[in-house]
Length: 110
Ligand SMILES: [Zn+2]
Image (cartoon, rainbow, N blue to C red; front, side, top):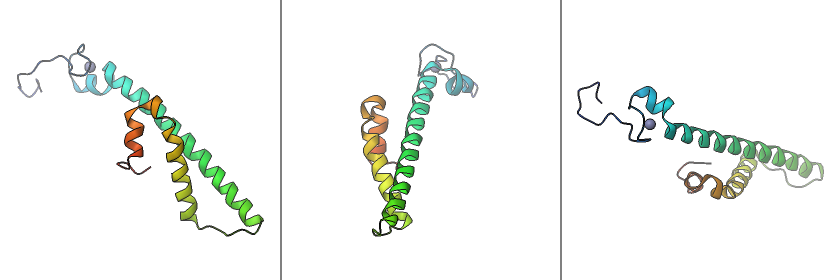
């Protein structure tokens, strides 16, 4: 903003310490680094949950067909995986706070 001639405080509004610039805002700011760190942990958790659920339901489907039960179509298995991931993710609401609640609210299709 200062670069464009705007009269604003040059102190970062997120951390209150650094001088605001693009590099600071997206890379150097302590606040941004904390958001990225939590986001990476949440993403890793989400991927692990999805991976485990996919493997479980594929194995379950294989066993169902082996024992002569009704064969599901792919979309039904995907829906089961999605429901299971959402249910398991709700257990992480305390750890990740409002981000998980937002994911579960349906605002973002998990
Ligand atoms: Zn900052």
